[in-house]
Length: 122
Image 1 (cartoon, rainbow, N blue to C red):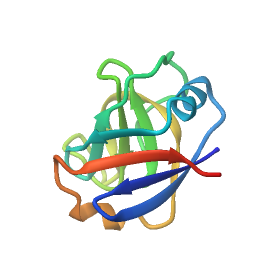
Image 2: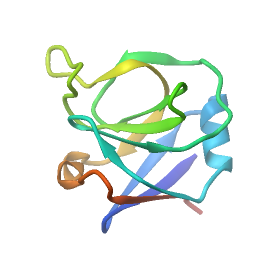
Image 3: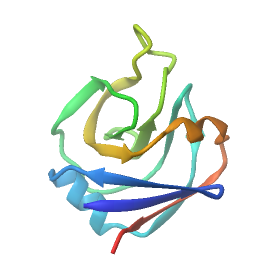
């Protein structure tokens, strides 16, 4: 399942894994929210039905994770305040949902408050 992500003029694509949370996210699209930054992670409100599955705390660059308690989707593109050895690390375990296709370095210029839009790719 591919999705389109637009943030302040930047356009990215992501591939979602086939898990319950990813299907719920895909079915909730389109959506629009505003992002928050936590180091080289952006996250935004995205309330969907989710169950604990595919939980990870140490992520790879480009990974998408869903924070159950905060009902937020996160995109990891570098070190976070919780990182060890330079790898992205979530504050708590998140549901691994998929990954960005392509270079995520463009996200370094995204500031808190920027509008993010997610849509399905046809």
